[in-house]
Length: 67
Image (cartoon, rainbow, N blue to C red; front, side, top):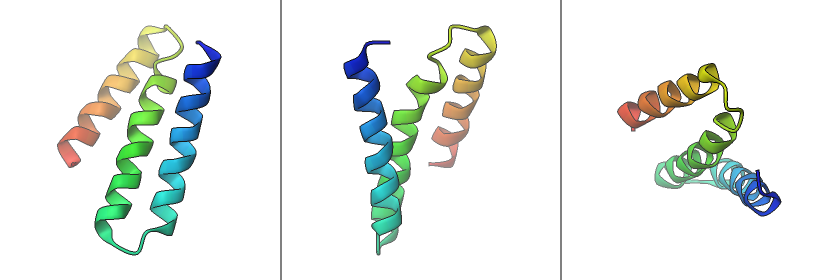
C-alpha cells in the first residue's frame, strides 16, 4: 500500500476516534464512528486473502444495515 494512502487512513482512524470520544452529541458520536468505519475497511482488505475480503464485506454490510 502506498505510504501516503496508509498515513491518510491512519490519520482518519485517529480523527474518527477523537471525534467519537470528544463528542457531546449523538450525531457527532455517530459521525466519528462512520469515519472509523470508512478508515478501517481498506485496512481490513489490505491483505489480498479471500478471508480478509469476506470479513471486510461482512463488516461493511453489518455496518450499513445498522446505520
